Length: 233
Image 1 (cartoon, one colour):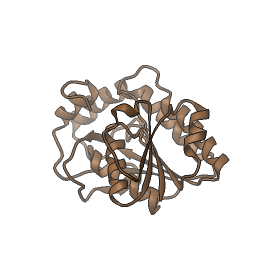
Image 2 (cartoon, one colour; image 1 turned 90 degrees about the horizontal axis):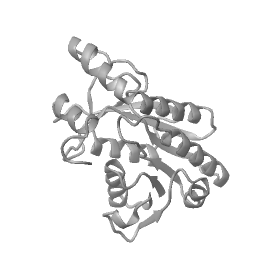
Image 3 (cartoon, rainbow, N blue to C red; image 1 turned 180 degrees about the vertical axis):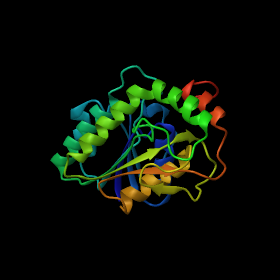
């Protein structure tokens, strides 16, 4: 398949691009900084474009079979609108070019409530803190989901939980909200994105992706992802 990947230069985007190439797909990787993109392949085109530029999005989407968006914004941003604005441009471009299949990433934080089966401390302390810090991001992700639901596209939204860097694809779970589990490996998320883009099993649905094997401590993920301490991704 011919795939175009927005957010391709982020941690999940790079993994998704690499796996797509390994599986024999032709990939157009969209990034604002192509000079920093680490992958090369005969089947890869790295294109400089801003997902917030509607003309650029219209241009790069043309000629592809499916679109994957791994776009995101830093956790705790005060007023992010990247997901919904870029999503609107992508939807418009896909409609203009007659492309139906779209797979996007949002977050399990969108419902703004704790998942089932959690401890009292996690429900009363950790989750409220994370939701407060991430509220603008989750609200924008919700706007993206609402936007997609109003289209005629064959879309799927995948919601990861706390992201971490795993060393392999695991037997992760994909299911309707709200699944039990605190973490999602970026490798598992990339695999789920590619599976949905190339062989859709959850059309016009919001699904969660949860990793249950070899997960880190909640405190390490919180420090790295929420507080931006430690190595930058």
